[in-house]
Each structure stands twice: as structure tokens, then as C-alpha cells.
Amino acid sequence: MFDCVDYEVSDGVGLVRLNRPDQLNSFNVTMHKQLAEVLNLAELDEVVRAILLTGNGRGFCAGQDLSDEAILPNKETPPDLGSHIEQYYNPLVKQLFSFSKPVVCAVNGVAAGAGANIALACDIVIAGKSAKFIQSFCKIGLVPDSGGSWFLPRLVGAARARGLALLGNSISADQALDFGLIWQVVDDDSLKETSEKLAKHLATQPTKGLYLTKQALAVSSTNTLDEQLALERDLQREAGLSADYKEGVDAFMEKRKPKFKGH
Ligand code: T3D
Image (spheres, rainbow, N blue to C red):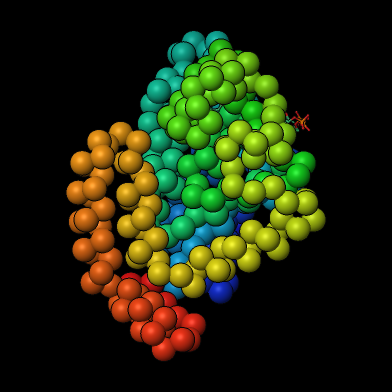
């Protein structure tokens, strides 16, 4: 269907693979547009109850394609990176972060610049042992974007966020795990199987309840305890009306496995 993004649906999972392997899946405008289209399809498709995002080839994503005309410096008309970010990266990060279904990211190789931070916008990040994470922005005079300056301090704390953002060091998957940046590291050979298994599991779970859970977690670090308790009350009220809540309780009482429908 597309050339820069592969998309297929299987067992309730929308499998999205960035597909510019020769450029380490760095973003050009076409890949942005195709990814946005695929994510919209997955959001609207009731059959899809989890997303798995990964990359083709040896890299996950090397961030912005630095050879792309749209962002090249030293032209007669200087580039407006702000408007490029507003048009492409910000909507992408918002969409991934607030997706109504769980988003698993399988980091199959280097994740640099915006490529590192779109992984952090996903709900659960699994990396292959050889993956690397690099906040490359500082090396080319830019600022962490794609939510990096928001996600990093929340995930790893202020000191590590500063170090990562100001030094731009490449950190290994194991170090990313140790820092609390990601959920799990697995052998490269088992990344595909492990991440697909996890996404398939999530696709069988109470999708609505998971979405409400994401909403609670998304705002907890800026809410007061009173605000968060009030939000939990409201979200729980909504969850309590779902068919999956009824199914979960019925299955427990009947000592059987629940069959969640996602609503
Ligand atoms: O408004 C805006 O859009 C601004 C937004 C910016 C967001 C950002 O993401 S800024 C950060 C941009 N990304 C980078 O600075 C990373 C640049 N890449 C690298 O530093 C290295 O490639 C890696 C550390 C990621 C991987 O290194 P390595 O040694 O494994 O691979 P390589 O040989 O450098 O790259 C392989 C090929 O991919 C190579 O092409 P070639 O020589 O085989 O034809 C290389 O040019 C290409 N490639 C890698 N990254 C990019 C890229 N081509 C274009 N843009 C890239 N970002």
C-alpha cells in the first residue's frame, strides 16, 4: 500500500514497520504522511486492539532525514524547523501518546534524535540487545524534540535527562533499561517474537480499561493528589460501565478465562 511504511493486521495487532532501511528509517515527509495515514487507519479499525511499531533493516529510526530539502540549512530562505515540527513530529507524538489502544515499540537497532523520542511516546518499549538510544540533537545544534524534553526527565530523572540531552551519548539497550527509559531488553533474535507476543496479548485485554488507564497515567505527574484522585474516580466510573468489566468479574466468579471484547 505504501513504500515508506509497511502495515498489516494480524490477531488484533496493527503491525507498523518503518521502511527506509537504507537511511536507517529516518523521516522524510513521505514517511511522515504514510505513518500518519497508517496510524489513523489503526485507530479507527475496531479489529485492531494494539499497535506494534518497529523498523525494517538494521535501525529503528535515525530521526529526521538530514538530507531532506525541507530542513536543509544555508539556503536562501532559511528553513522553518518550528513549522516542520508543528506539521509532522508534534501530531505524531501526540497521536502515539494518546492512542486509544496500547502501543508497543520494538526498537530493533539504533534510535536517534526524533527516532529515540517517538519510541518514548509509545506505551511499552522493548529493545533488542544491540539497540542504541541517542539524543543526537545537541550534536547538530538542535534541541530535543518529539517530546524528548518532556519524556526524558519523567522517565529517567533530571540529572540523567540533562546528561543524555546535553552530551548526546549513545547508550546501549541495557543502559536504557537500567535508566528506566524502556521496559525490556531481549536478544536481537527474539525481539520479533517477544514483541509480537506482547502486542497480541494486549490485543486480547480490556482495551477500553487500558485506554482509561493511559489517560490517568498521562496527567499524573502534573496533577495534585486531589486532582488525580478525582480523575481516578471519574475514569473508574466509566470503566465500571464497560462490558469488559462485567466480563472480567463474571469470568473470575465462574473460574474461567475472560473473553474481552475491548469495550
Ligand atoms: O524540523 C525538523 O524536522 C528538525 C527535526 C529534527 C529531529 C531530529 O531527529 S534531529 C536528529 C537527526 N538525526 C541525527 O542526527 C542522526 C544522524 N545519524 C547518525 O548519527 C548515525 O547515522 C547513527 C548514529 C544513527 C547510526 O550510525 P551508523 O554508523 O550505524 O550508520 P551510518 O553509516 O551513519 O548510517 C547508515 C546510512 O544511513 C548512511 O547512508 P549511506 O552512507 O550508507 O548512504 C547514513 O547517511 C544514513 N543516515 C543515518 N541517519 C540519517 C541518514 N540519512 C539521513 N538522515 C539521517 N538522520
